[in-house]
Image (cartoon, rainbow, N blue to C red; front, top):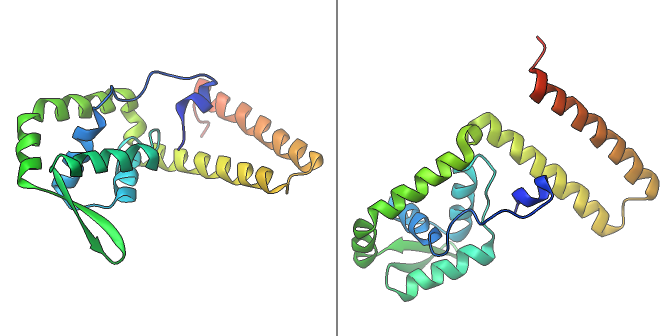
Length: 170
């Protein structure tokens, strides 16, 4: 998961208040049956890559929704697919205001982050971070490689800061 606290060096309050994610998940499943990673991907895309819930967040919520009778799970091509039940639709209808409130909160939090360009940029940053972290965990990064990577990252950071502060030169 690409955490905002990684970028800013400190923790933030959670993206959603306790229990709020279930409304968005149920709303996504209402739109079409989905498996867990599809839900993660959809939430990540709708936030422009800024928010990606972990499987440890999504799967217990799906289990809770199933236990409550709001979704049912079937197998399709070896994957569990979650479908909304009539009880789930009724619950969602009763709580439309909560769904809208949390969708609005996402829009406020991410603003232009929902754009395709921003999402692609965040995906590249996440991919770069994962690649460097994987290399470090595998022991593939010697002190010389680490210094060279840090130098490239420092240069990129300075160039990005210039673009953010001064704009793009045509």
